[in-house]
Amino acid sequence: MTLPDPDRLNLIFAALADPTRRRVLSMLLEDDMAVSDVAHPFEMSLAAISKHLTVLAAAGLIRQERRGRITWCMLDPDGMRRASVWMQGFGQFDPVDLDDFERFLKAEMKEWTEE
Image (cartoon, rainbow, N blue to C red; front, top):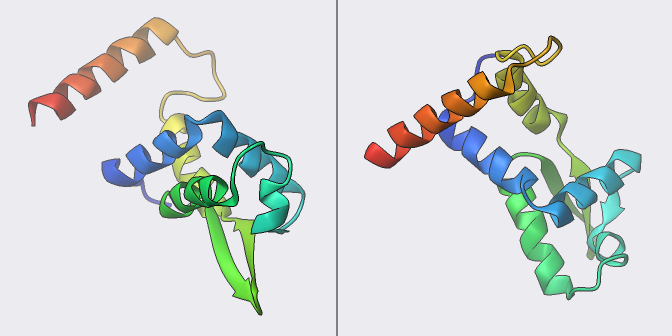
């Protein structure tokens, strides 16, 4: 798999930054779920959960499929794989020097803000 483009990575990491969306992904690890079932454990409206699902789908982390009148959500492993491939470049399975990683991220952010 080739490295994902920076825009795709931005969408993935922005989606993963939210604890509600991370919880949704954890729930979908178990099985595909209807939108109403995804919304059930959260104290928020169906519209609010739908917005979270839209972000996850735009990032390529989940897929949604209509089956009759019900919209089902399922994980899309390729989305997470893209982020994992990028992270492996930093020695994900080796000890990571977090100071070096922080300097790298600051340099990356500086480049993005200068463009």
